Length: 447
Image (tube, rainbow, N blue to C red; front, top):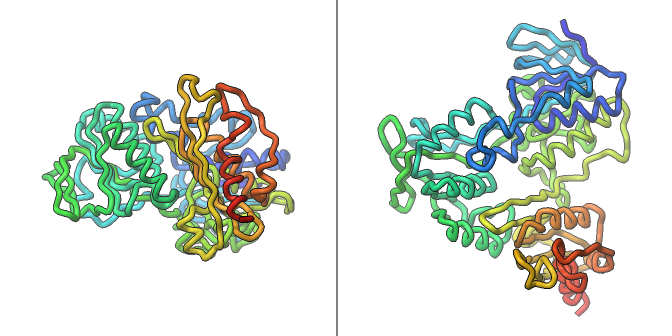
């Protein structure tokens, strides 16, 4: 029997960060990760292994960081956990005794009930080295590729595969791609850029069937249109992987394993982090599915710090949902509530907007216009959310919006921020995009 103080089940981003944080906060404790996979991947890098990264191997997270930190790694699968004696059993027949347990079992792809989804050359987006290696080889051999799902993964796959000269189509059942994360005008910018770079986009469309013999030959849509396809990628989302937690008798909802602000489950010595853990909205406290590596690692740091001592400064306040992506030459970012969600939840709000070049003077090479949309409460002018579109500067600018939301900033406080600027790196100090948008909102608040 292996004896360890802290056992972590799952070795993705959340599991690794939980282990490192636990070892950092409790250096005298023995920490062990058990995971099924020989190699673990950077989840956000998966769409890029098919072109930009040139191989699946270049998306692998090295185990060296675990070894250097004195963390044990066991390649096996935990099949059962008895919380009475605190013993976990593996498929390989090993037993592990523990004091504290962190579940980081991740998520599984959602596969809609589509006729023909079992044909050859129909792939899901799995965090599996061998599976993705096979998928990469099949993509090389294919020319007509249909992606089912227009969320972040579907859009990023489409943008990457079109660079390889493939004929790529996205089929999305909602009114726009990225519909869950952005308001219509930003979704439409993304769709326009996808079409500009050669991707066919079919929104308000459902897949009725995948056609062909043993292998894929086409995709039939709800409007009767048939798309040629010799490969299909199903990117219709994921669901929390809670099977082990359910067998352990922990409280579980359809949103994941129930946890408190310290990431503790219904058992005081069991924590859950990452995609398998239930998320709650920062503003409404309603459960929601926001499965992001950035959220997972934030949760992992909180769990790792609170294993043996509750540290009041390390608690999870709720999921903001800070997103960033890139399509062609267009970068997009969102944080907090979009206007559609604020309206649905009954918030009284105002919207501030600006369109500002991201360099100064705007005649500098590679200057892009940044479109900013910020949402504030009508009373008090507190941040509710923000969306940005423009050049690569958007990726870090949206993090500033996330910070402002979490820090209870108001529009009045935000416009007085002292900021650093440089002609090649930022908008002019006279007109930063997000500050101009905040000023626009303030005029509406006090008019």
